[in-house]
Length: 378
Image 1: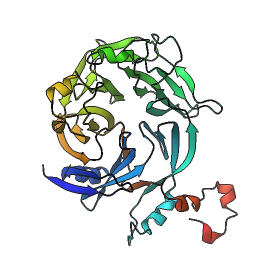
Image 2: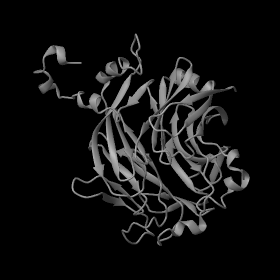
Image 3: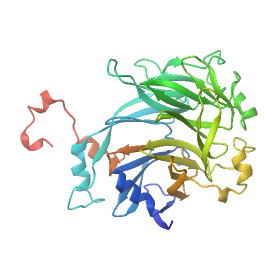
Image 4: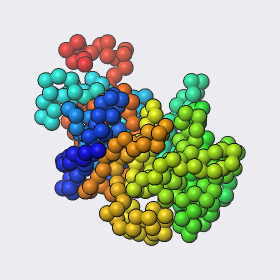
């Protein structure tokens, strides 16, 4: 597969550059989809979208973004000390198309996420997030509170409201005892979670990070699988439980009866961030820096030089195990956390940089909108 180098512009002075296989934008076009990626290390939300046969790599600045959750037209992003919620306002797409950046003669954007809500959590090391609930109950956002080793939700009065924690965590304290990090939903609720250890001591998971990882059943509190190397991103998809064994750089499935993890593909990077669409898995890879956190794991032993380890998004056919394409970041981005496919959204944008555009884009209910003059409606 051919690489086509795509220089990336960004408001910040730090250089950012990516390359991609020609198949990557072709797949997005065929699927009618785009991809969101968070990189806390670079402080960016990255939008990957097809544009005239090449990959348009679009960056927005956020404060250490990590977890992503989407619920229809709602998008939540977990940042350093807060959670931002954005809502898709399609009427603003025309304003984007008419801007200096996109002087298009025809409609280009098909989604525009505007900020609607911010909740300050404090520095709780938010990891994965999800909207949960069914038709008979309101949907709410839950998130992995890694600092306090618990699953939590937003609170109207408090920093957060704990809703679950592993049975081996005995107190509520910000010590990152087990590095609880990933969640998988099933039937509208959180069913499985990943952690890097079973310790009740601050930072205790670091002593056995190589193979101390585990998968937990939230309902029973039982540990389904042990001996995993830094697992992340569990997902229930097509009747199987998938996860990324990040320390090995693999993706695979877990047999719920035996707890055995079966890898189906291995990659040249620390696998973290996973989203599915049809038979395709979009997998985040991090280069991982030379540090005490990542020393001694199988990936670093297999690929000893940092230059051998890649950062980006890889596309895997989960039915054949074949890699179909990738987007690789070469400068500015070394670590990825979340990857989220937006099906049916071809060319989105997220606006948090343009105070004027946000300030003059009003969203009203139907009753109020009926009293707005016709020439002001979009």
